[in-house]
Length: 554
Image 1 (cartoon, rainbow, N blue to C red):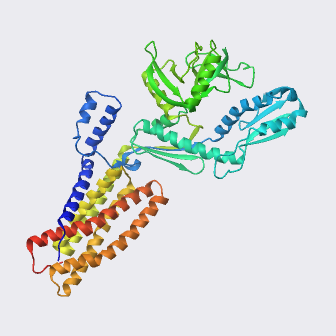
Image 2 (image 1 turned 135 degrees about the vertical axis):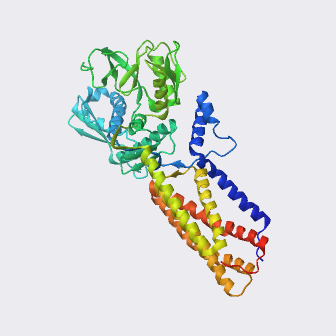
Image 3 (image 1 turned 90 degrees about the vertical axis):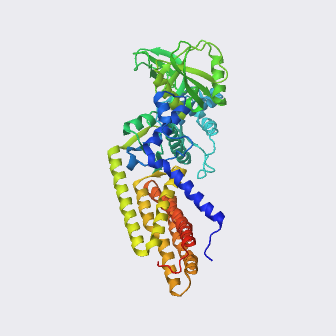
């Protein structure tokens, strides 16, 4: 008997209603987008008349999820950057110097003088006065080696130590370089992602390409330079002891352990600082824009427990001494330590505007890039080009849609109309699911939807042709319809499961546009099977129950 239980009918109609309701905001894209942006600003504490007006553009009780438009549809910036991992090697060698000099000073009588020599950035050269002490120096410095923290470098040490005459030369081992490269790339990816997320950009594409390159695609921004300004700033913060001040950048720093850094606020003033910082920005856990006691913009900061302990110990031991706060190789402030600062919190003051203090807080909160980025490629895709792509995709969808509707009506008459209604519901469900998961729609994604429109009727064609065959065996219309759906089910599932597996493989193995195509294709297969097996059958059953025809023509 041709029938569908009441609970199944209710479930089908509720599923359709939920899917179409989720897709509804995409029909009012500009209005809903302004509403969502306004709500984001309100959550950040930014309110004014315009923000409140935008927030009221869309009812709060309706869904407000949108299908995000990709770079090729919305316009935006495309950047390809290379990470200079060599910078990390140099930083590691600089950080190793205090450990080396401390361990050698423990037996200074054996080594005589201990001096840091000029060397390549990725190596540390220490000269000792007594050549007879070289073997003992090698033994002590090698004792500083630690195991490499990586799966591929298990059992290896992080440094190689060798001697050339009176010089002890320390370099990173090959296993440690590989592990450092991997950590540097992962850290760079995460920091770039956090910086872009801080400014509220929708659905950026940030992924690794090759060994040392990162691809960044940010839809909706006006130019590639905007993105470079966000991610290109290293925001490397250090707190370094002050040795002295000078009026020339070429002045003798007095020791290779010192460096000369210009002042940001005082023109023509340079500070001589110890190279090894007391605390770095990597030990910051929070930074927020604020105002100092004079009402000038500033930035409050807070260290993690390790940084707090080092910061507190240094301030306790150096009361009355100046202490430089260095940001990106410029001294932004050099206050005198007035008292012990426990707790690991403080304030950065300088000649900031409110915008600059806010931007600095964002950069510090996101963390410092571990190495410099070199931009190898940058492109700005204008919104006009994106709109052209949207228009072309819309035309393609409408042409495919109209052709399929016309074909189904000519081929199957009234049953073709049922299939057409299901097809319209199918497209709505696709956009509802895309909105629900926050997917990004690209040109290949539109191609996936067009392909889905063509494939969506395949299941109905199988069912209707099977019903035709059953009618030829002189069975009644009710029995023919029931057998048509039952016997076509296995073929429908086989065809769609194999295509869905292909979509899953494309998503897992592909990237960027390929994934966009795979997402829309996979979701389209799910909705197509649902509409073909359940929706068209429900429509046919409702029609049959009302008309009770003695014969039917498919």
